[in-house]
Amino acid sequence: MTEAEKIRCGNDRDLFDALGRDPTIVRIKERIARIEGDSPFRTRRRLLATAVRLSHAMAPSLRSMADACIEKLGVALPLELFVFPSPQHNAMCFRPEEGRLLVMFSSALLEDFEGSEIVFVMGHELGHHVYAHHDIPIGFVLRGKEKPDPRLALSLFAWSRYAEISADRAGAYCADDQEGVARALFKLASGLSGRTIRFQLADFLSQVDQMQEEDADPGVGAPSEDWFSTHPFSPLRVKALELFHRSELVNSSGGSIAQLEMGVQKLMSLMEPSYLEAKTVAAEAMRRLLFAASLTVARADGEITQAEVAIFEKFFGKGAFKETVDVSALEEDLDDRIDRVKEVASATQAMQVLQDLCIVARAEGHTMEPERGVLEDIATKLGFSANFVTRILEVDLSPD
Image (cartoon, rainbow, N blue to C red; front, side, top):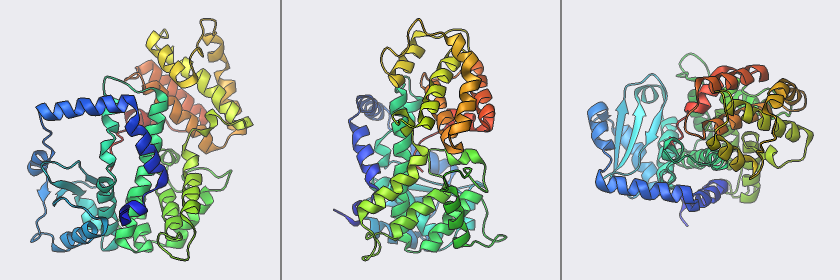
């Protein structure tokens, strides 16, 4: 086993293997292979036309950083680096094409990040390649004509977050600088360059600790809807990396790998739908809200179609929808169910229900304006912005 594979997040590996066996994903991967055989993707051609390729002469220090990461992670393919104009801090690794690995950075990131910060981002992007994350075609699965059932969609969301944890470990392994890594994540979270605000690792980690308090509001110092996304919220990523640095994977006298993975799973549990099986008061209230809200959204455009019934039953179980179900009564009871969730569940749990409701709504492949209106109304009554609904409905899950 390579060093890179040793540090991979266990839940990433397990979910990756399970998703790779899923019949829907297998069919889509076969379809993609046929398409590529007939008309190969031309990502490199597009990059050559719209971005600047960074040669050794143009960016010697960046190429040296890349070479060091390549050696540490065991990347075998030749690497091409590109930069594109953007005020956002962003980077992306593409699927190999014609025997080349392609990594792209935004101009803002290369201007504002330095030293180990860039090495972390470089290692993170190469980590996605090393762990074959692009073999799970999330974008095709969720945007294609053959829509996955909501439970598969939730599994894809969960795996996407654990995949980011693995990529972060790869980046941290390359950077070998805990404060530099945290500083990079701070810049990614805040959008700041570091020239006007002085970064303090202890203060940033203190924010993470406060966010872990049971009754704390999510996203202290940032919009609350940032707490739930396809990527773990940046302070959570810092906390997960702090656990990584304290483990035997980095420190021979550190905690065990089992303790590390349990700690990471506890962090990520705030973003996972465990309430679907749990027997707590909060979980029951969350399930009752999801049940009523799903049918209310489905009927928002006038009727509940057979396709919507099929999606609903894939999520709640066969036979969960009966003709005797009084949807009008559920709609009238919706506000009470919302109030109950606000009473017995935390803000993060309420947001989890809202995220899952959006996933159910988008499972048919589209959402009509009346459906989106209901979702936004529920979001507002739960105390969140309508923007959160938009982000979940329109999210792109490609690893970056």
